[in-house]
Amino acid sequence: TRCSRDWSSDVCSSDLSFGGCRSDICTSARVQPAFEIRWVDAMETDSPLLVVTGIPAVGKTTFGRWLKESHGFEHMDVERNGGQELDRLGLHDQWDGIFQSDEGAAEFVRCLRLRERASVIDYGFPPHLFEAMARLARNHVPIWWFDGDRSAARQSYLNRAGTSVNVDVFDRQIQSIDQHWSHIERVVDGRILKVLGADCHHTPPEKIFTQILNRDMQFR
Image (tube, rainbow, N blue to C red):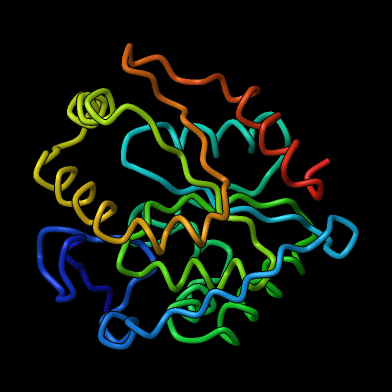
């Protein structure tokens, strides 16, 4: 059974859901952080991976789709339809492992690399679960934070076509990001891109990818 969880609290609730979370994981996910992150050189990895995360409604999923269409990446929007993309790839159980231990994160990364295809994970993670992202980072997966003008992002969130939105969800996520920012900042290790301006202009995906390439050589 999947569970839903309030982005601004540590208890499960009924108004929010996101793909990889299960009730048994939720109750055990909070652990003491450990930030011994070593970034791997390009030549040490095959089948490069990256995580795209950040504030809501700045274009994370759009960028992931562009990577798929333009560069052949496997794009996993892990929040979509209860983790449907993970189910399609047979990786949902392995994904759940990143919320439990470094070993679980290592197994997820190992299974994904076996696909021998560059992959992008699109995940606006609940900020208090930053340690799960740190586990991926310790397993040589760069975590890229997409930031931007918050008023513009809030408006973009409200303007999402064909969806029923509750702006309180956006506001709670932003509040939680601010609360946990010191931990998140250490996990992303300087990989922060402002991709949405106050004029609601999004940075073109080609420019975003160039910035990623300039930092993470394994994608060249």
